[in-house]
Length: 49
Image (cartoon, rainbow, N blue to C red; front, side, top):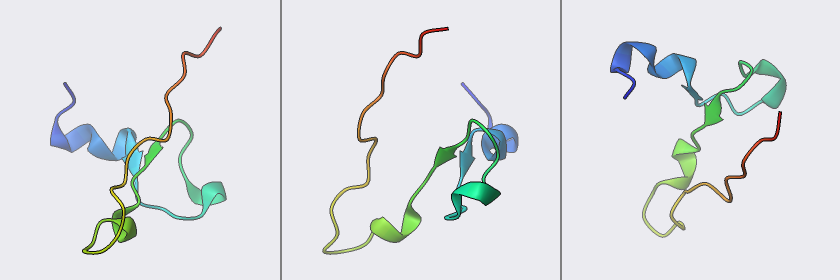
């Protein structure tokens, strides 16, 4: 399990795709408020190498 010190290496709140670090997970914090739908992963797929 990742510790909080390394959370910025796996997740980002940067909305602009071109400004995001490669291979980070976007957290849409603006979607998490009363009256909004629950933010979640739309779908996770196995990546073939």
